[in-house]
Image 1 (cartoon, rainbow, N blue to C red):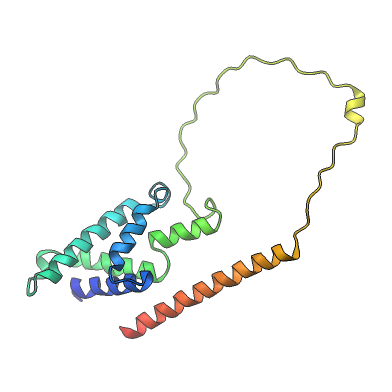
Image 2: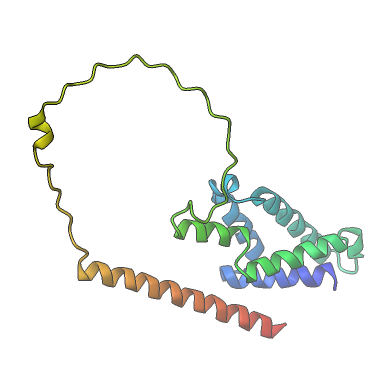
Length: 182
């Protein structure tokens, strides 16, 4: 197992994901465009910096034919590239985690933020309370109308679910195809 082999595996996977010849660059660019993610996803910045470093090492090793790649990358570097490739394949990479969180309504999928020390509440002068008469208490509350879900709305949500399932199956087929090529 060499760094260059593992780097090329990661590169091929990213090329397939982004349907380009610069898949790792596209992945990095995608990470940089997700401004909120670096605050929400653990290790986002570490993964981004590591991916940029390994991309640069991969380019050096590829350009300098016959160079001893051990000069640039050790066993730990190879393990990181292999691990990151597996994270992409299992949808546990930073972008996949961020996308899942966004699709699920953000807060349920994102890691919990650390609690910060609460500031003491400001003292506010009490406002006089309006007196309520018994007649006001016995008045019926206003009824609000809610619209039932239309058939079109239900079909629309069903369509989105089916579309998401098709996209997932397409990605799964691409992963199987990629693994069969190895």
